[in-house]
Image (tube, rainbow, N blue to C red; front, side, top):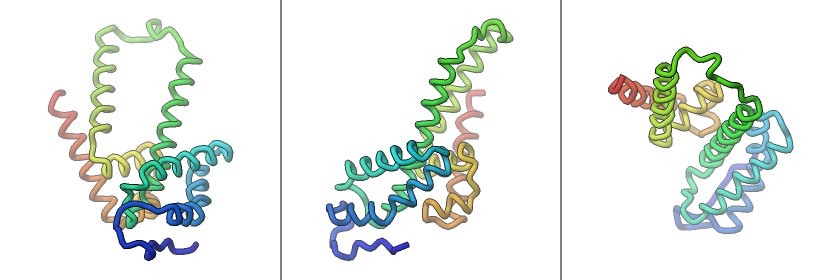
Amino acid sequence: MKVFNFSSSNNETGLSQEEYKELFDNFYTHIKNFIYFKVGDTALAEDIAQEVYVKIWEKRHTVKKETVKSLLYTIASNLVINHAKHQKVVYNFVNHRDHRKYSSSPEFELEYKEYKEKVENTIENLPEKCRTVFLMNRIEKMTYNEIAEHLGLSVKAVEKRMHKAMVIIKEKLNKKL
């Protein structure tokens, strides 16, 4: 793999059209394969990979060149997660059952719904770096080594971000329990 180098530009943020093309040429296949590994569908992986580059293009004026590689993988991971969430909603809609037959009590259902919303809001409000590591580990079942490799971080940095995420989640959920 060719090393990505922005030495032609003096500014620290923003991508020129040439730099964007170089980014695409050097990493598109890797991003597509990363996504394919997660979704198991070549066409879907190509669609999501293209969407990753559309998002990078939209953010090209604010992208920090030294972190652009990890940004690619973060956007790819988030798009895969969003796709999975959407598929889950579609699946639940198609396979909707009358939950009233199977539920314990209305109080239990209400408490469960409130707790689930609290968990989702807590995860959404995590700092972006912590949330990314947390979701890659807990949702995508990636090891710390895999996360470190994909985000271009040390394993220690991944451990620190995960620890911070867990501390925040524990604080937020225990306060109102």
